[in-house]
Length: 130
Image 1 (cartoon, rainbow, N blue to C red):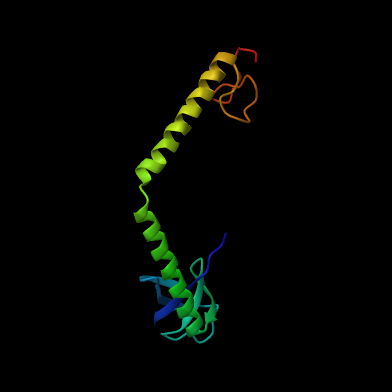
Image 2 (cartoon, helix red, strand yellow):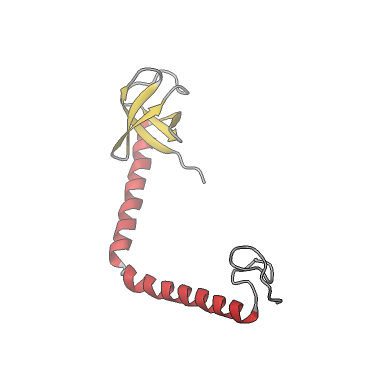
């Protein structure tokens, strides 16, 4: 998925470069695709290139929405206890992998789904028949 974000031009540099404010970070970008860029302009930034000019009101509205999403994400992260929520998942996943490897050793089958029958862990074939 591609993401383009609104940024505000802080200063113009030589050779079609500019310094922008990208969510509180200063970043140097290429503005050669946009005509007559001036400090204070809002641009859409994608992969280091300004690809379009943005209306200031639309840019500020979009940036405010990003701030709301970030605040909601922070609140959600603070209200959960990841050590309890994730630790059980990790144990179950490790146990499942160990169980699958143990069954594969006993049956002479691959321990990775999609690996051909009789294949060993290095991708070669074992002496055992499955």
